[in-house]
Length: 159
Image (cartoon, rainbow, N blue to C red; front, side):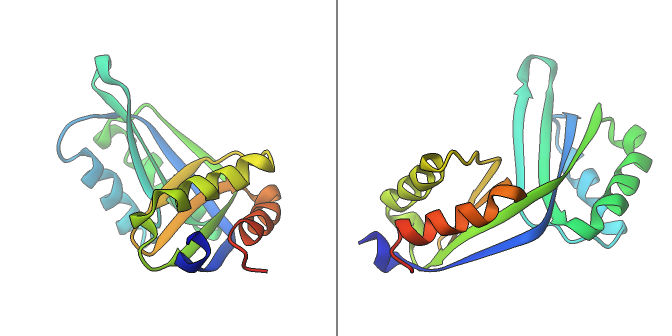
């Protein structure tokens, strides 16, 4: 059943991950972060917000951009640091994105489990996960991306 849901695999070696650390966890702060990014005319792909310091009222926001936009997004956010009130910025330019593509992928939990098991079997760590009805994406170290693509091809019988 899994193989029939996954139609193809897409991947990109040209991703960068930005984490805005210690963002005040209140309405409007995420809007301020992405206004700074939008003002720099930078497209964002995957966005994850986590409340890592609940007792301090802070969260972290991680997102991906095209690798070539890394310096500009860091400049734009650094310039907005005081107005937004975040603690730190972390840039990682050594990530790649792997996506399973198909219809109804979120309707069968075994697809996600099989995907993550295939990556784990190859000792590939997942940094960020994003799931929609037609795509399951994982951000991994770019030097392991080709291995991840191969593992997913084998797991879903797409060779």
